[in-house]
Length: 185
Ligand code: ZN
Image 1 (cartoon, rainbow, N blue to C red):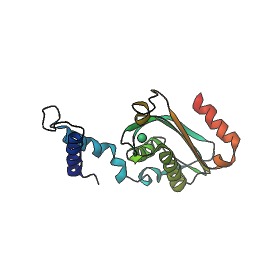
Image 2: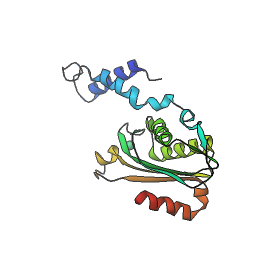
Image 3: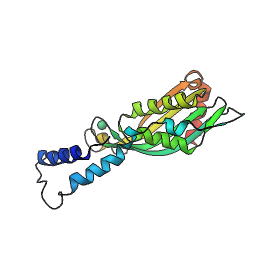
Image 4: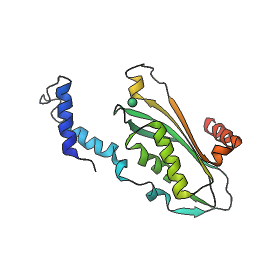
């Protein structure tokens, strides 16, 4: 549960830490604004992907389902700076599927936390494996990390790509290739 009081106190200290006057007119409401914003951007902490993945529909044909270009915004846990981009998610059903919007909702559950890109991909894949029990899952995330592009090595626009495979996608190179071709199309 987000504690808005603690966030307000911390932001006031942070402003003092960078040499600012937290009482000047432009900053006086900043701690409160950030506290409210954090409640939203870290709201995934209180959510469980099971809410979105337990209502399933039976299917006859177990062909790969792929949802691509799911936009997400998350926060890097090392720097508390945004990283954002898109997720591509595929699974091979084992007799049942979920509504397509539920994949995007699952991404939101894990994006709205203090997060690492690689960890987020693994959490999405594992939630799908656990709740939907498909034959396999593949998750690819492409994101720009402001902690890399705004400071440090400063390579604006560079993107980090991470891939996670589970089940049949881990075993079958042709299936992975199929995923890549469909994502790049
Ligand atoms: Zn970072």
